[in-house]
Image 1 (cartoon, one colour):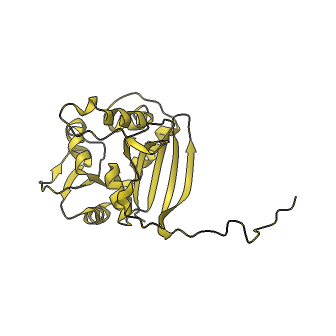
Image 2: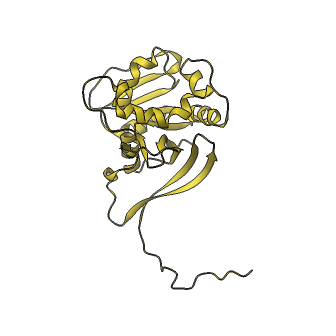
Image 3: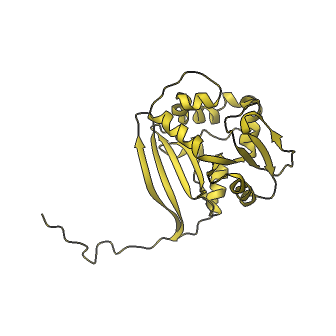
Length: 233
C-alpha cells in the first residue's frame, strides 16, 4: 500500500538548517548551509548515500542501511521548487532519485527527463495535486516528500502525510529553519498526534519513525485526582 512519507535531519532543538539565506552571494558560505550540512553530516559519510550521488567510499553501517532503505521504499517523490532549483546543477545528468519527481511551484516549466529513471514534473496547482500525481505513478511504493522543511509542513498541514521520520542529530543550533512552525494553523487547543513505530540509535544520529495520526483536541487529564491504577510489589 502506498504511503506518503517524509524524513528530515534535525538538531536536538528542532532546526533542519541555519537561518534562512535571502541575500546575494554564495549559499554554500551562508549560515543556513552551515546548519544544514551539520545535521546531514551523518548521511553524507555513508556508502549508500555516496553511491546514489555517484561517489565512491563511505561507511557501510546502520546509518547507511537506513539511507538505502529510504531510497528503496520510494516509488515517486514530491519536492519544493527551492530544493529543485538548488539541486539541478549538482545532481547532474543522473540525479539520485531514480524515480519520478513532482516539484511544487508557481512557475510553469516543461518536464525534465534525466538518466537513471529520474524525471521532474513541475506542478502548479498545489501540493495535493503533486501528491496525487506522485501516488499514481509510485507503483505501490511510497511517495516520499523530499523537502524542504516548508513543503513537509504543507503536506502535514493538509493531512496528507502518513509517516514521518526524524533523524535527530546530537547538536544544538540555537536558531535557524524549524521543521515545525506556527504555519501549521493548529487551533489553540489542538495538536497533531504521532505514534512512534521505530527508534534506531547510533552515536551520530537517532532515527525516530512516527505514524501520523492526524489532528486531535488537547484535553486536560484529571492530574491524578481519580487515583489511577494501584501498583503492587
